[in-house]
Image 1 (cartoon, rainbow over the protein chains, first blue to last red):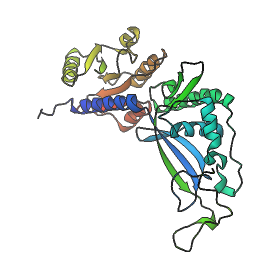
Image 2 (cartoon, rainbow over the protein chains, first blue to last red; image 1 turned 30 degrees about the vertical axis):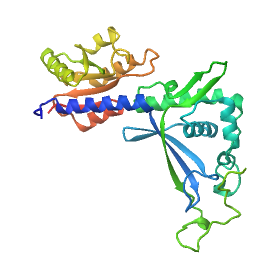
Image 3 (tube, each protein chain N blue to C red; image 1 turned 60 degrees about the vertical axis):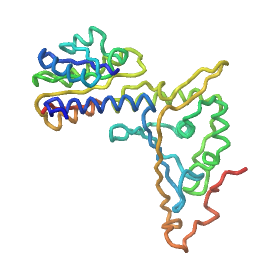
Image 4 (cartoon, one colour; image 1 turned 180 degrees about the vertical axis):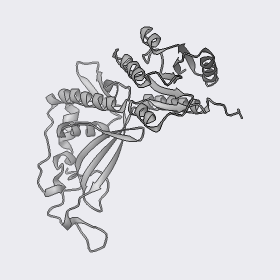
Length: 203
Length: 111
């Protein structure tokens, strides 16, 4: 075993940086999506919840991406499909067909007020703005990567582009706090059916 | 192989650090000061992935120097930018370390 010398702490930090570079190259940065209005007792990502915020997680700190609702939709959609590159029409259809976006934030008050249509023609502009937001947050975090290397726009053999998020993503949920819906701890408790959003995709 | 840009004005110390990096399989490019690194265009991820800034004399404005080095890395439209490590021989005050970390660099002290 080599003797400990004065450079040991420096070499350990360099090893850490090498590992950090390798991880960033292999899988990109890490993001956390925060959802709220989860029905107490339910689990996972379900219609009725809201995409509350998106954070870059870097070196133990979180940096919020300043995104509009439509941009949160596009980012979250791409984060859920980060293994696949999709064109604008596929993204539009994917969002339109998913009850999660259709009933976005409906658990809050039973009305669908926080939703957006994402037309195909707007995807390019949303991606451009997402690049801006990513650039700001990478700069804040001192993370030296190019936003276009994270939200990738690739050419196809045709004349359209496809989009893919090269990043890892985790999800966190916070429960709805309305008085009539929690706590859901005992066998007597149940969610009022008239106000609960559907939990299964409609066929 | 990972390439390290070592900014160190002490020849003997730089030699010792370069040898230790070489034992870890790292390639070291050494310059004496930040101006040389900027003028030679060494601050891109094409040249080095890690920049080690040795803060020998604490009378220097190291945070300004670090900032100018980081600015220089962002001049080109590179897909990746190098990561920074600031090194001192003496333990620096906690607030100074925090300021370094807030700039996105890491800090290590030789003990």
